[in-house]
Image (tube, rainbow, N blue to C red):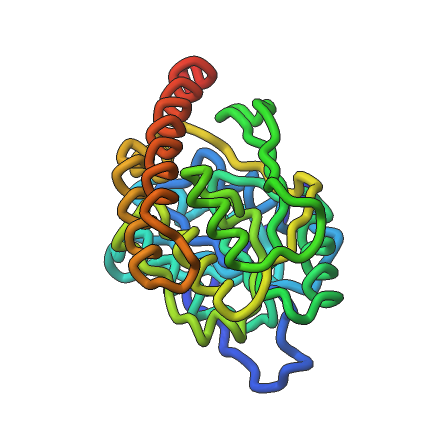
Length: 293
């Protein structure tokens, strides 16, 4: 594992106008009170076999030692910034996204981990498939201590999947089958067309963004588990997940109302049943598998 230090700059380094000098991948890491896992998360990025990236870290006024973790690292690809005031997850995600200068972007969670070849495989998928707007991989779900619980994989063979098919499957399943942000790499030029993350329905802030991206092209499904999603009773996704059913139902109704994806009333009803079951299953996992966390 890498044991280097952050750049001590507290502002984002000036962007260059020369495309050749820009990093090909921007890994955006918004953090808030992440001292427990953020060092491990950063190390997993620095250990990538694909090295042409920048790591943009935005601290949203943490009250723990997250903002001084940078003293452990010294890597010119890392740029650290601390917000002057708390702007919340949506604001911090969008601030990081706006700072990205790469051709591709990954929003990376402070609790999660990347396999050493995650960027290499996802970049290759998008480079070889020009129509795809995002690449998403299978994930390994891990406990707070990093031990494996199980793998989650999208229900398609490896390759391109059109956006309508993806969204309809999400609705039928009552959940986000693409995956959490750490599992996804997307094109920056499409992100600029789409705009920022919309946190009005917090539980689906990521899925809402994937759907908006997929209006511009297909996704690319990768079957290998290239990211680890850590579950913990105190993580933000666990807190907002307590309203999982109601928020996913609201999201389905919002998408159905657009009329763009052939999502009918019966599909929303079926998805609502699945969303309720998923919430119960999530509660069981957190109570029985996490133990003391």
